[in-house]
Image (cartoon, rainbow, N blue to C red; front, top):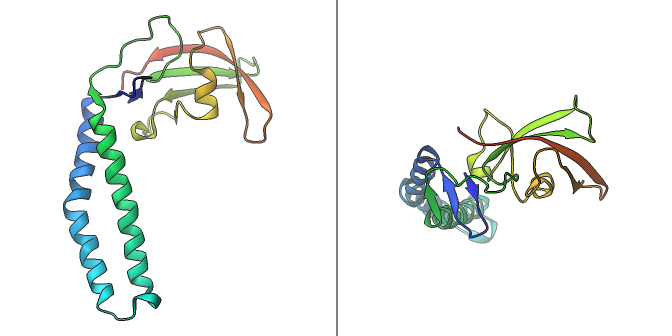
Length: 166
C-alpha cells in the first residue's frame, strides 16, 4: 500500500480484500458482540462503579474509530500498482535500502508504506515517520537527513529504491 499526495492509497488486491473483510467484521459481528457485552454489564447495576461496563464502552470506542479509519482508507483506495516515481526518487510503495552515516556495511532495507501494509516479510516504515519523510524525494546515491527522537540529526545514503512487488 502506498499513499500519494492526492490522498489516494494504492492497495494490492490482497490488501484491499483483507481490509474490506476487517471492516465487514467490525460493522457486523463485532458490533453485535460489543452491544451484548455492554447490555450484560448494564444489567449488573450501578454504572458508576461497573468496570466491565466502562471497559466495554472503551472497547466500543476503539472499534468505532477503527471502522472510521478503514472506511476512509477504502473510500480513497485504488487497487492495483502505484505509478512508478517519474524521476526515480524514493516514494511510498518502494523498497528502499539505506546505509547509515555512509557506512556501506551498516544497511537497512525496508518498505516505505502505511502500517496497513506491514507484513512479517519486510520491515515497514511509514512515509510520515522521521526516516520515511527524510528519504522521500531523494534518489539513489544521494544523502538524506532525518531527525532522531532525541532531536539530533542522522544521515543516510540511499543505496537502492525499487517498486514493491509483494
